[in-house]
Image (cartoon, rainbow, N blue to C red):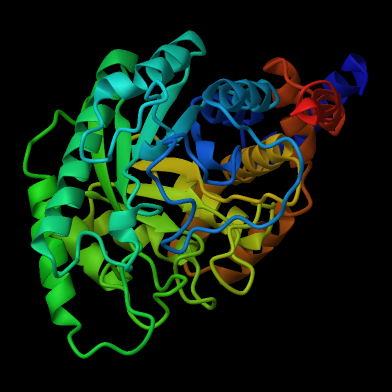
Amino acid sequence: MKEENLTQAYALAKERYAEAGVDADAAIKTLESIPISLHCWQGDDVGGFETAGAQLSGGGIQATGNYPGKARTVAELRRDAEKAFSLIPGKHRLNLHACYLENGGKYVDRDEIEPRHFQGWIDWAKSNGLGLDFNPTYFSHPKAADGFTLTHADKAIRDFWIQHGIRCRKIGAEMGRQLGTPTVTNVWIPDGYKDIPVDRTGPRERLVDSLDKTFAEDIDPKIHLDAVEAKLFGIGAESYTPGSSEFYLGYAGSRRKLLTLDSGHYHPTEVISEKISSVLLFCPGILLHVSRPVRWDSDHVVILDDELQAIAKELVRSGHLHDRIHIGLDYFDASINRVAAWVIGARNMLKALLIALLEPTGAMKEAELKMDYTARLAMLEEQKSLPWAAVWDAYCARKGVPVGMAWFDEVRQYEKAVLSAR
């Protein structure tokens, strides 16, 4: 789109929003300050770089598809991520799993990993102006092969995974210290039973004990934050997961940890947008893993659907967008261009936030308090036809990233020049 057309379209959109009592310039300024944490595992189908000694799959993690161009090395993954970041407006973050360490070709087991194995990532993030987030990897390992980690009945196996978690917290803290922005380290385990268990209490008692030992050392929240993530079920754990929603809500509230809400980790009739306001009353903060479940936790690329917009509106309306909420993406589609998958999801998350920021929240809350539900409904519906897309285009242009589908042309060129040679 020509620059003069962008300018004119934004001027008209700004005027329309002003009539509704919304400052479009202020919305853009706020959007600039919201980082999205891109998940490294979209770039290589949750493979990681542990070399010999690690399993290839397990624990309910599965990427489907075989689109060409998958990153095979740390260097390739970083290059692909850099390309994706160049097409997403704003300054953002990268979310790493522990299995993405740099070990110099020598296998390092997970209870032995150290910050030095991630110094290359820290240096790369610093040079690109990015923050980092982190995750222990409790899957794809021989000691997770029978479906249990922190809840395992064998104390030796539990101790192995507790040590892994302890080391991951130290790594996350070092990332935060060097980068000057707190790393959110998120705990998710695949533990559970395929069929109906007799003892539902025992694994949860062991999980409480394991988590308490993992989190025993206090870490300055200015450099590191802990989060815990629930899940309804997984592959091979269809009947019971110790780390359920109720378990982790209680744990996060009582231990003052962030609670992670993943879009795909609940019953198909549940949505995380409805949970945000309740969780913020009892937990110090929220980590979002924004995904798109199709019939189950299938981790499809995030689209600008009703639920994504509802999530964004709840985040903005909460008033805690900057101090208690952390936004990350979590999906892995191997059936399409992986760089495009990153860009589509991140731009859609940002679009949803912009739509929410352009909402006359104050006026609608006032109407609601007055029980003027007619005005509330009218305003909610009117927002749907206002020209948010013109504001989005102006934002992209200001941040120096392609407007409209121009970003896709760059991905196609990158695929031809780089990905097709792999």
